[in-house]
Structure formats: C-alpha cells, structure tokens
Image (tube, rainbow, N blue to C red; front, side, top):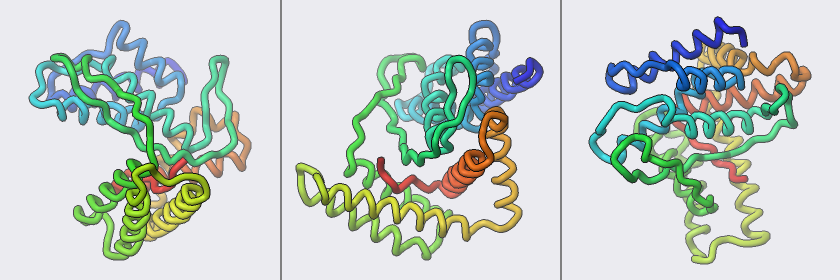
Length: 257
C-alpha cells in the first residue's frame, strides 16, 4: 500500500471514530497513526476495521453510560480479531516477511463479547471464551430469530430456523454435551444448513446488489490478489461475497468448526 493510500485509510478511520464518538474528535496521530497505518500495511479492509471498531463500542456501551471518548488504540484487539475472522473465511493470511495465500477454509467463527470492568474504555477487555456447540447453536438461533423479526429475512427461512432449533434441543438434551459420532453428525448437518442458508440469502439479492458485493469483495482482496493463483482468488472472492451477504442480512454462520 502506498503512502497516499495509507494516509487515506487513516483519515477514513479517524472520520469513522469521530462518528462513533458522537462527533467528539479523536485525532489519529502519533503512535495511534502508526497503529492504524500498520493495519493498512497488513491489508486490513476498511470495512473490516469498521466492524472491529463497532464490536468494541457494542461491548463498551453494554457496560452502561459512557464516561469518556474512545481512542482508536482501545479498538486494536477487536479490529485484529475481525481481520483474523475475515482471513480465515477467505483463505488469505499474512506473514511477517510478506503476503501469501493459503488453502481455502471456511471458518464459521462467531465472536463472543467480553464483560466490561473498570471505569475507562481501555478497561473493556476482549475475553477469550471456550466455544461449545450448544453455545454456538444458541447464538445462531438468536441471530436467525432476530433477523426474522426485523424483516431482514422472510418466511422462507422459517423451516431452516426450526431445523437449527431442533439441533439446539438435541444438544441441550444431554447436560454433558454431544460426543463422538453424535457430535460429528450434528456438525455435518450444520454445514449443510449453512450452505442452505447462504443459497436462500443469495436468492434475496437483485443483480445490482450482487454486483456491488462482488466489487466490494474485490476491493477487500486487492492487497493480496497479486500473490494469489486464479483459483485461490476465485474461492476467496466467493467467500468474501458470502460474508458480505451475511453482514447485510444479519445472518450468523451456522457451520461449526
């Protein structure tokens, strides 16, 4: 990324942070500028950085009335977490001495927000939480139900929501959790349901929306494209578009890894 592109990236982050802080101007200068410039150098897509900032603010607002404006430095862990999820979904990764592509892999990662402690925004940690199949299913059902209630998805998704709910009830039936073959069978069914979800979601988009999402996916992947074989880029673009479809409709990743 050129110096001019890096500067523009930092300006966009500063503008977005200002909006999130209700118009309170927090400059991205000095060490903060170096931090954001490093995101640009790693190829963090701008909207991925925005989503990481959103994630921090959601957790910060959840603790109650805000006490002070949020600096961009406090959002670093969330931005890098979202970037990691994006990389694993698209099959793109960064290494210390350059950029490379890896075999395509669908991640199915859902982030778990941490609890808020302390008085300042910097005291809101990202808490790593062990993911369980039952907790994953609970989040999936909640997000699908929310998307249905908001009108983002229609009645055509009711059958799929019912099937995911049945998988959740099966997982709840045994307090020790599903194990062995039973667990693997559920995971396979969730993978199939996720593919069905995406197929139905894509069918809701018109040609203009699809074209816009492909263009946005290409922009996200542009820092990595030069080192990607054509087939790897095609798979990465497909995964990036699927991620944008999920974001647009508020849909979760049903598959579990």
